[in-house]
Length: 260
Image 1 (spheres, rainbow, N blue to C red):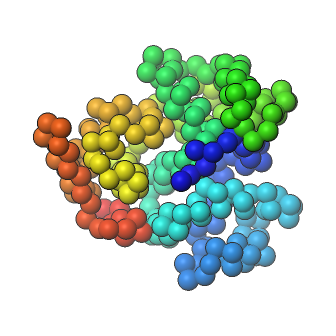
Image 2: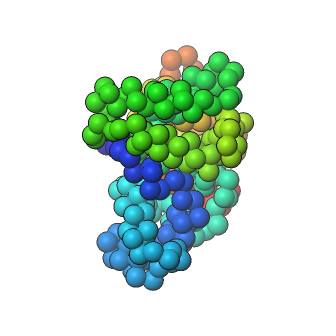
């Protein structure tokens, strides 16, 4: 169970997308060592080139939350990075795991931005996002009762993070970016979600797809495209949906994707 089922935290203030640092972490990862041993070595060697030791101490727990809490995810991501997987696809996968492990990011995208996109709206109102988060906090969805200053900083942090992940665009005035999801990234996400939702029919309805503004019909189109590219097998007849993959583990599937 991921933290999107838990309470909101303000960690986003200290860490945004961290794409370059994440790729450095994964490229230096030793799959034969434990998470603790890897993190200790990475901190000791300062692979991120941070001037402040405290800055490294701030971001390592973020990496642990996003990518290291599920061993199969960690191993799959290391494979993708070390085998030179497409950066465009990898960035979408890292965004997916980040959103799934940060409930506030997940809810902002799937409840607020997804509704905007469905209505054809593209301009982001910082005040609207901030007021929505304030309501959620008042409803007890955060770890503590945040003050206005914290809510403001969290809002800015989320919007900047979503811009760096390519979901939004614009340095000051932010807008929804054109939806973009490479089929290889879609296939990886479908494999991951299938492990958590074995029903092919129910998988099509998961709210996770709203992270990419995909309605059910969009998910079906991607499944057909992935099927045509021999990344998976998808067959639908009436209410019966059959979805299968060529391997059994996420790590193995990561290897498959890097070879296509």
